[in-house]
Image: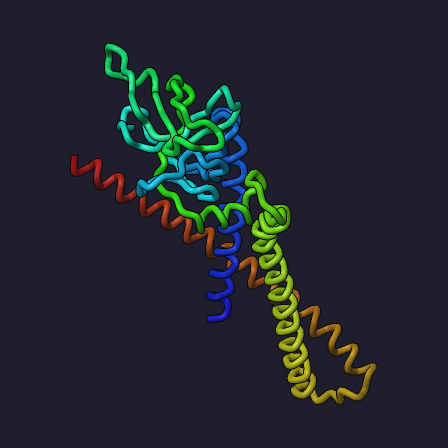
Length: 267
C-alpha cells in the first residue's frame, strides 16, 4: 500500500514539474510571434493598468483587473466584444471594445475599430483602427481578484512590493524541492528497512548455525560467507526474473503473430 501511494505521489510531482516547465517554454516561444505577449494552450493572461475601460457594463474593466484572452479566430469576433490587440502607437498590447469590423470581399476580417468605455480616461480612449495582424485575442474572463493574483505570480505585472520576484520562483521550485525531499526520505527509509531486514535474517542464520554472536571471529567469518551466498542467490533470482520476462515477451509476440495469421486465413 505504501509503495502504491509513493508511486502516485512521485508521479504527480513529476507531472507537476513537467507541466510548469512546459508552460514556461510555451510562453517564452509564443512571445516571439505574439507581439511579446506570452500564451499557453491558446490563452494569455494580462493585467489592466489604465482606466480606459472603466465603465458600467458587465465586461468593463476597472484598473487592477486581471483578464484572460483566448486566441479565437478574428471571424468569430462581434461588435461589442472586448478584444486585445497590439497597438503600435503605444508599442504594447491594449484592450478595448470593438465598435466596427471591416471585411474584404471574401468575408475575411481586414480591420478592427475599437474604443475604450471611459470617455474621461487619463489616457485617451479615442477610437483605434488596426490591422487584423495585430489582433491577439478575445477577452473571455476578467476579475479584480485575478488581477491581484497576477501581481503575485507574473514578473511583468506592476506590483508595489514586487511579490512576483519571490512568489513566482517559489511556485516553480516548491514542487522540485518536495520531489527531492520525498525521494531522499523514501530512499533513506527504504535503505534502513532493508538493513534491519538483513540484520534480522543474519541473526536468525547465526542462531540456526549455533554460532554465538559474541564470538566476533566466528560470527564475522559466518557473516562473510552468508553475505556471499546471499549475493549469489539474489543475482540468480534477478537473472531468472529477467529470463522469465524475456520468455513472456516472446510468447506474447508469438500469440499476436498467430492471431494475425488466423485473421488472414479467414479472409
